[in-house]
Amino acid sequence: MSKKVTLYITGLLLIALLATGCSSDGSDETESNESANDEGTEETTERTLTHASGEITLSEQPERIIAPYLEDSLLALGVEPVAQWSIGDTVLDYLQPQLEGVPKIGYDLPIEQTIEQNPDLIIFSGPSALQNGSYEDYSNIAPTYVFEQETSANWREQLTTMGEILDKQEKAEEVLTDFDKKVEEASNTIEESIGDESVAFVWTMGEQFYVFDENRYGAEIFYNDMGITKPEFVENLPEEGAEWNPVALEKLGQIDAEHVFLIGNEGEAGFEVLENSSVWQNTPAVQNDQVYTMNDPSHWTIDGVLAHEMSINKIVETLK
Image (cartoon, rainbow, N blue to C red; front, side):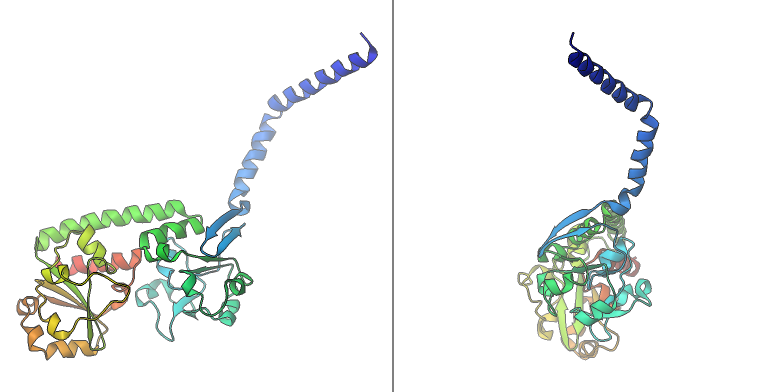
């Protein structure tokens, strides 16, 4: 055997021995390295998310988040925004116990106000929400995610997607599971309380009146998931459109619901209008003293898991 061949075979044997040693004697070190990598995964793993305006890559868990009008989903996942949606002094009243002390930011996210909050993630409810600057303007401030309009409009999909954005998918699933249990329990309670008696939900703003159809805000849950009986008046409402059209007082006087939740800010002009209206005073719910005034409209007129939980609590508490 030539010297060159002998050296080649010797080299192969050395490589094999080294490989064997690494797989056995070095196993503890390998496991230690894997453990160290696992410990650092949460902080260093990059996530790339595709959204309505492109892609973003997040290498760390964002802590300073601005997500105007999406605060319900954030809080449901245990995340407090760095600033909250507002129009002037108007905020989402029903969330104020959780958002006390959180500074306000304009609904259209003025660029200067956004910079002042030093966010590390900005989330818009849809492309149409970018009213005060371009996507690039916000991306230069922080990674910016833009929901598909259809996704943010569906509160369940909004919450699920928010869980994906924040790497809290399990928490989102848990919240939805708990909500479905709440709906089932509330449904049983309502059935025991009023049976198949019908319920309507009327919102007054100014001197105008809006009746919730079965696809409007929480009414989708009340009627379709909880099985609350719709009055014929609601059954005959025009098909839902993009605009929510008010119902004339004379038409409202035809409402045949046995129970009516009348929703509006305290002192709203519509309450006085109804008080002085003979057509309203002759409706079944008024005649039977089964009109219930709800003076916090904010959670009734928005889609969100926390909002719907509050509305369900009010229904159960009122009809029990």
